[in-house]
Image (cartoon, rainbow, N blue to C red; front, side, top):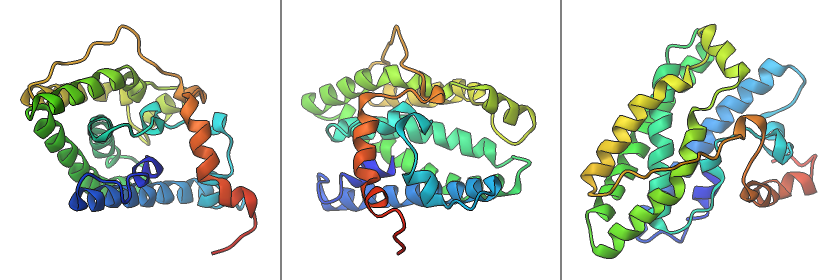
Length: 232
C-alpha cells in the first residue's frame, strides 16, 4: 500500500494532499519495516526486513488484494484508503491486547497513525460524495468497483485462527460487523449508496493475487534484484 500511495507523489490534486498522501506512504513503510524486522528476528535465519520485503516472489505474498490495486483517480484512492484504514483501525486496536509484547507495542503505535488515515479518507469520501454531480458519481463508481475486494479483508487461514486462539493474533472475522457499521455510516453521510457484490474476490491468504501485483513487484524489487548484496 505504501508503494501504491508513493505513486501519487508530485501528482496529488493539491499540494496539501500531495504531502498528506506521501506521509501516509511513509507511515505504512515504517510499519511494514517494524513487522518485517520482528519476523526476521523470529525466523532466526539471518535475513533482514529488506530480504523479506524485496526478495520474495508473487505467490509468497499474502497482502490484502485491495492494497495492490491501481490508484485509479483520486476518488478511487480515497475509497480504497477508507476501506483499508477502517479495517486496520479495528485490527490494530484489537492487536494491542496481544500476548506478544512486540505485537502489542507495534499495534499501539500504529493505531494513532491509522486513526488519522481513516478520518482523512472518510472526510474526502464525504466531501466528494456530497459534492458536485461529477464528484458524487466518481465516488460511487469507485466504491462499486472496489467493493468486491473487501471480503478478502476478513478471510482467515489456519495460521490466523491458531494465533487468535492463543491470544497472539486477532479474530479477523469478528471485526467485520464493526467495519461494516462504520463504512455504512460514512457512505450514508456522503449521500452514496452502499455497494452490493454477489461475489467477493478472495485468495490472498493462499498467495493468489490480481494481475497487478506482479507488475508492481517488478518495480519495487528492481534495485534489490539487480544489486542483491548492495548496502545503503
